[in-house]
Length: 118
Image (cartoon, rainbow, N blue to C red; front, side):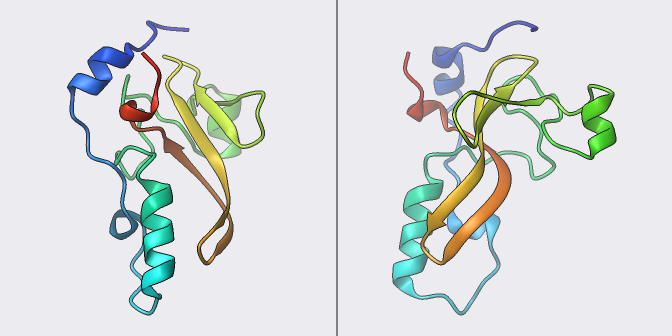
């Protein structure tokens, strides 16, 4: 693993929290569902849509081939749905269940630094 990330340094960057409108382009959704999604998504950092690590800049997801050749750096952790960047250790969640109208989604979202213990 490359240099481990620093929680304090990441928090000092004042990165924006992820919101509903950063991820979805839905117009016909109830206010209750939109609020549930916003409440859930604020635990994650608004990052690069191409899946680049907010800490070290390495690609997180990709194709099966990307994973096999070491290009995709997301590594599954011990807790179901959780993982981290194998380059710097920055934590993420890749499986999301039962959030408002969403029953299941698989997308790598990195945690906002404010959610990490120092």
